[in-house]
Length: 467
Image: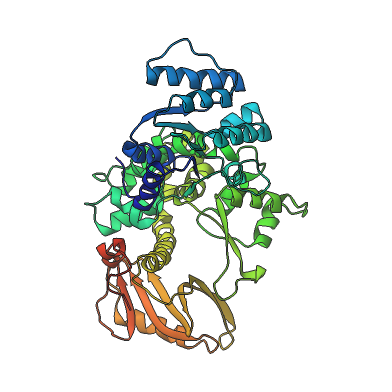
């Protein structure tokens, strides 16, 4: 089942119909790169040679690629001494041919980084004016990004480059079109935005059942996806498991992490965080009103699935073996699951405003994020869930993952707290409430759970505005 990715599909299809020679598609493991290329290449008018590179030697990869050619073209007994020689042969066939090299970083590991890129430079340069195209795919994000650097042999060789991201909350929900709002939000909060994971979730079962079967069970399909695939690229990074467990469902300052991970201040934590940020496992988040303040910068896990795994699964692996899935869920997951979901609902709310801007429903937005406040009157500081920055100030949005509609009493309490901070330039105050509201107020921004999934969020910029 292929869902969403409309913009990426259009870009790929345009590449296939153009005079372009080479495209690059990269992103995290299991994010849907292969599916995107497979879906978009249905529009390609010629023959397709689709090859998954391995970490074997140059000669083994070349021989296997040639074997794939022989299968597609019903040819036999072909031998070539190099990749450039093979591609010259394809060019001379004067046919529409698409060559897909999946997991290109495997080829680099087996042959050598600079050597492989220099070889591929010759291949792509040799495609000029031909009817042959090549697409490189890769999951090693830092390795693939380097192909775009100015000092790389492949610099300026790609007519198209796509960095494929996990689905946001809205596109993730496309996997569960008939589920109710609360179930849908919970599924997104637990299983994240990777199509490979979302496709495993059973919308006919409860969230608890899906968690037990897919994540807590030692051989659960999504647990295996995390442990045998996603975590594969992080295993060489030292204290990565300890760091990700420290982050869990929350966020930590550098100082808080250093006290736990690197108490002797050896510098290893900085290196580890940089690698995890480069690999898109972790991000450093600044409040939008303090973008350069290191004291209010927090580190957090980017993906909900990885976050859930290191909040509940990794710390309880031995307990699952000893006591079983049901006991661990009852004692270690269920008591705090509501809190876990409420934090993730804040992410969904911020993502809603970002998506509304992209859809053209909000105009004049300069930034979306959290807002750090210092309340001098009450001698305290803290963070507002969501802030939307405009040229003339902030819209402050509080996010409520409640079991019932938000009432007027709670709203007034939140409004008083926000208005009581003298230094805050507030345009408007608003609320996002999963179950909606028991009151109406034209002076407030009121966004219900249903509004988060409104069809207008798919529409182009010419549609009506939310303001």
